[in-house]
Length: 293
Image (tube, rainbow, N blue to C red; front, top):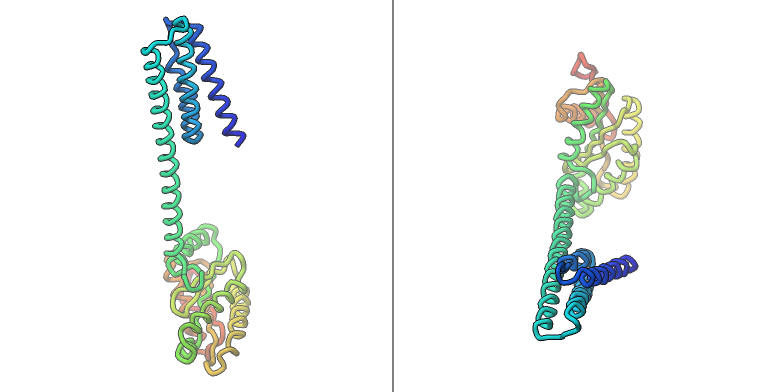
């Protein structure tokens, strides 16, 4: 409010100054154009009613100078000039005010459009059921991490989790309960991983996590925490033999293809299932031997 009052008072002071200049310079030099400066200032910063106030003040200042310069003779021509000046000042001020309002509205619309685009981009990269990154987002995050590991000659580790007997949960308890289970598993991942790790839901009952600068032993410990958290869900579904199997692909030097990294972790997960489910299997890959190490 103080800012608005300051602008209005400053604009009226300029109007008074230009009115005085209009009078002292006489009829030879008129400063009518200067009145547009305070009008434009108010029109670009304040509301329309303030524009009209400054326009009326400008017309009165200009008319007063005219009245004094013509020895206080009020004629029909001077009245017409006063009305004309007021009309021009008001039209110019209101036009500028309309432009400002359209600019502000355009900014609001652009801000809303950008907000919608950002939200759409977030939705396109987020699994809406669990809130985790989806497979598209996960692969996009995986690629620069691969490049960083290759550049810095750092190891890379990927965890791949698949739920055991999840279909039984859906068949015996319904898909609503199945969705609840998936959300609980996602929470297990969030709680078991470190802040720098990146969990994701790849689809169905398959999850993955990029373990940042983890050793094979450290990754196994993380997998054990995840499995233990998932096991705590199983008692709620006693007839389903519910659980999870985890595969870990640990690369001393990762390949450039992100899908290859995911594929090897997927292979490790199937090794865990073939070994009896509910456990972790680790594949170590060295630069000179892309097979199991």
